[in-house]
Image (cartoon, rainbow, N blue to C red; front, side, top):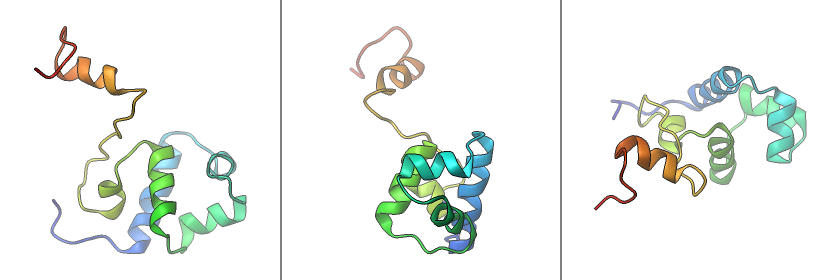
Length: 99
């Protein structure tokens, strides 16, 4: 865990960098989040997020809330029903369960 939590500006910057890394446009993010593109642009600028908004952004970018909030420095992927088997195969090749 990092020594200090990030400021809101750091969260905004992480969101912008992750969006660019994934080659997502601001328009794409706005459409997935079902918001106006100008509202999304404020997300990357100075907007202060509500918890559910951060959760939705983290889901779209497939990263953890802890990473967005600055609690960890590695953007751990989110485990979903869709990618669980793939992640399990990476962790335990050739096995279908943890046991």
